[in-house]
Image 1 (cartoon, rainbow, N blue to C red):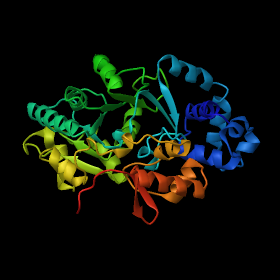
Image 2 (image 1 turned 60 degrees about the vertical axis):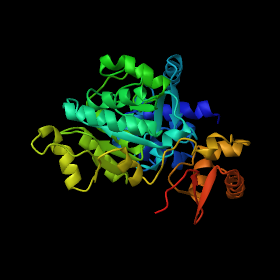
Image 3 (image 1 turned 90 degrees about the vertical axis):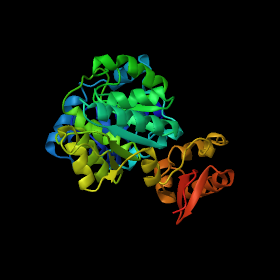
Image 4 (image 1 turned 30 degrees about the vertical axis):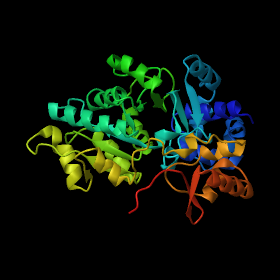
Length: 368
């Protein structure tokens, strides 16, 4: 099946309520492909192991949703729809348990966006919160760290704007369709993000900012990045949900200490008390992640892939080690093809073999 045909079925199932990564994997595993699963009748679906409610939902909604129309609409808005089986899908995001089967992307994700930090916090920051966010984000951006945030009011907006002013890249992860900017006053900054990064969402086109979308949005924000920095947050701030997701996903959590008498800092201070890394400046984050300034360090940017197989494998490699068996499963290439391709890429300096058949994209690592 061609890539667009496969995308239509991924998209179709993603538009059905209650169908996420786990159930989609069950369908694909049982039927062999999503095209067959989409056409299966109720009796055939009952053999997959799905509950009755899910089966009824599939039977009802697949006659209502219009994936081909959704794909066409996305194209009109310049939005790419990337499925989880695509080499264009962010490799780090796919490491989390409940990664979204489909991503809507407006703008471009680049290889260097593997080096990214999520920056989150209160929607009503103090002068102190604004200042520390601006200073640390500016410094991280100048060190070529991509800044990801949720495009909300307050710390999110400050994070995006500070990254842009510093000439850096930034990613906005939305709790609405990528063609529905919320809050509306961030429309101008959203356009700048598209030009210097990307807007990302798992929500369908035209979907508004529903309350239930935001906690799920937060898992994408933390899953996409190396770690989450909370610069200022109270006890009930939604930023703490992102930090919790980051911990569950085995990502780093960083927090800026604040005034012990300020309710706006009670959440960040508690995170530190519970084990989050106390951050004073950008150097603390770079040191904790064990990376130096990234400019000129991504050698694969200078060495363009010469073969189709190299292009495929680069889509599955990142800054985190990945075993050759996992690369084979994800790329669907034979073990011999993957092994020989990785060997050639290693000679070029595109990848590093860390031992035990684990590989990463090349980067400078500080000696411990």
